Length: 444
Image 1: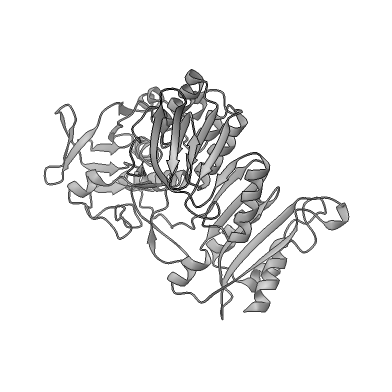
Image 2 (image 1 turned 180 degrees about the vertical axis):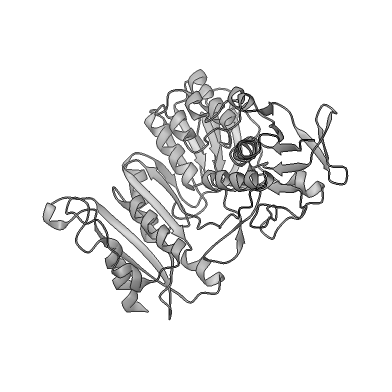
């Protein structure tokens, strides 16, 4: 008899697992279940859909339920999985129906964090977690002709949303309890990001904490902070996410120290027949040598594929993560990979760092954008631990290069003499990566 495979969750990891398992072993009976009305969509472009850069949400859907059905994967939408009985190999749906499985994939993703303040349930209050959130935000802006917005938080989703709403012509405030945006980045680089925001008309309100949301019958809606009252036709909370592990925890599946589902390198949970992928589970960090939870779509897709391969009998290990990430803020590229100094120290490294500034092309060209690179390495060994970059051009490409260096375990001596494809329109003969490695090497 063919094996029954059930995948719970249709964001990124779940569809990858379902598709790969069925592709590799067509005899499998694969069913994917999701609470919403979409599966297999790209969440990262949602700010650009809201900001009208992408004109149709359907372009964000990588694979429709119909396409999955054509490939032999049954899709059940608008249905919540209420429980798992691991001893009987069964799941229970919201309507009371029970389904049996031989293998189960828990890909329940993450849930958005909301502050416990009065008024957070009002109309006009949103988080941006899934495609339905994105559609709801866009529809609300249009239906209510919103002219002002407040975004609470200053991570990369908040920054991207700030740009999108400002481009729609809205008066936009970013409200943050800290001093500078995107706290992972070095303050010197974060200051450049702040400058780009303010240059483009974003009101960055540092050292403000939300207290309440109030509605005034005459003047509309306001976000109250501990220091101010901000008019906002729409308020978006972008305070990060936490792993959605309720279903797994209630079933007795082990949860790791990060608060996410514990998995091995094959994406197996503490139950051999149950796998997990995506935001709800842990990943092994190749530099810190610790298990971490990094909620990024590309990681979820890769983990899902590994889970599907193993379910289909194709033994495959997920090799881990570096936490590489990038985003755009108006004309600025921002990217990072590996550990920052604090993470490096917590991981037991004696870390040193440097920041160098240069141009994205050779000085002889007489132009080029200002570009900054921060590089972090281990004293004594010179092992690269992490890097960050900010600039109007070339930042993401250089971080991708340094991510490949990290993946390979390279040190500064290797990086100083790396053979790049040099040409004056793209870099100096000694690229800024070479320069940063040389400067940092002298400090070790």
